[in-house]
Each structure stands twice: as C-alpha cells, then as structure tokens.
Length: 319
Image (cartoon, rainbow, N blue to C red; front, side, top):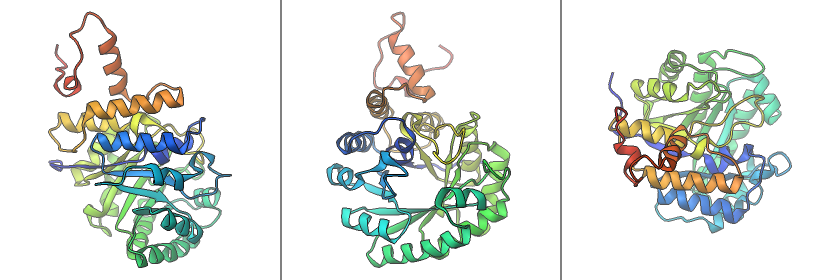
C-alpha cells in the first residue's frame, strides 16, 4: 500500500503535553512555545483548555496564552468540556474548539463524570453553539485501543462514538490510544472499522508511546489513508486520568519518519528541535524524542562533522 503524499500534523504539546507535566509554565512561556512551533511550520496547534484549573492547573490562564500567542496563518485550538468552557473560549478568541468523548464507559465516568451517551448529549449543544459563532469543532475519542479500567475496547463502539461526533457537526475526529497499548495491526483494523462510518479525510490518529509502538501504529494508519496525525513536541505529556500512560509520540520523531519517506509535512525539523529544546529547558526535563536525543548526542561528539540544520534530514544511517 502507498501512504499519503502530504500529512498534516496537529501539534498537541502546549495542551495535551503540558497538562501532564509536573511543572506549570506561565502563559507567557506557553505562548512563546506556540510561537516557536509556528515558526517551525506547524499551523494547527492546541493552545490550551478551558477546564477547571483545580482539575488541570497546568492549563490555567489559557485566555492569557491565547492573547499572547501569534495568530497569523495559525489555527489555535482549545479543549472545552461544556457550554461554560465554550463561552470562555469564544471570549478569548479561540480559532477552534475540541470536545473529548471516550470509547470506554468507565473511563468516561472517571474522566468527565458522565456516561458516553450523556457526554455526547452535552457536546451536541456545545458544538451547535460553537458553529453558530462560526467556530469549528473537533472531536476526540479516548481509549480507542484499550482502557486502563476495562481492557480491550470494541472498535464498533469507537465507530459509534465517531459517527455521533461527526453527525453533531465536528469536522474531524481524532482517535486516541490514550494509554498507548495499541499495535500496528489492531490500530489499522480499528481505523478501517471507523472508516465505514467516517470519511478518511475526517479521521486523525493520536498515539501515545507507552510500549514504543506509536510510530509503527501511525505508519499502519497512513497505509489505510489517514493523513492527519496528532503529536507532541519533545514527546511531552500523557494523560493524567490514565495511570501508567507514557507521553505522546514526539513530533520530531514523526516528522523525521515522514521526511525519510518523502512525505511532505511543511515542518522544519531543525526549528522543531529548537522548540522542543526550549520546552524541555523550561520544564527542566530531557526530551522523550529519540530524534532529539540522537541529534544532541551526534552534535556533542567532537569526532563527528559539525552539525547543521540539514543534518537530521541528510544523515545517512550507513555512515
């Protein structure tokens, strides 16, 4: 099978990444991270969320982040849980909102304190109101390949939730392997099942790398025809409601893989590495990105040729 000639990357680091980091960054620092990601060529960026700061303190003052972030040629999305969150997002001038459902009843109840059906009823009102103001809505589905409480999740349930989100007016659904238990063939079969009720151009994938399968899972879904991939700079974050879940797949690793496959992303890898380095310095942690680690090691080795901006792209694995 072939893969798409172009893949759109949705950068989730400033929201899904930072919300599970131990340090809370200021709105100014979060806006600077968004600025650096935009300079790398990323045009779809999750800027934050309007959820309770008691539940997710890392996302407090998202309105200030939006006010400080660049806006030209950029779509900044925010997560909203209800009509109150939507009102805050509209007041802050968000370009896009996202609502988050689950394919697991237990996860839905523990994450947002309601059943799947109740969440969809709530989100239908949120999406309708957003569209009334000309704001697009994206739908997330958690636990598409496994739940920390229920185990394996039926792909038919994933398809049902995806269909409901599209019917209420979401322009796209992002299928999230929240705890990172997926593998390539199950991931492909899950996407194929969802594709029976949703056009492929309305499906995105969102993999966590708990068992080191995220890139393989992405590739398997690209072969089916998916062309939108969520990822987080430096592999930041995870899920605060899923015990043991590792971070998102690193944007640097996704971009490197796609570049080596001659798939266009519009993203500059060297500028992306700089953005990841900035985020990790602010968070006082090392990047989870394997590309960032390899590039840093290569640049610090005095026996190697000097590093330059084209090194990650032109590096020959045989040298």
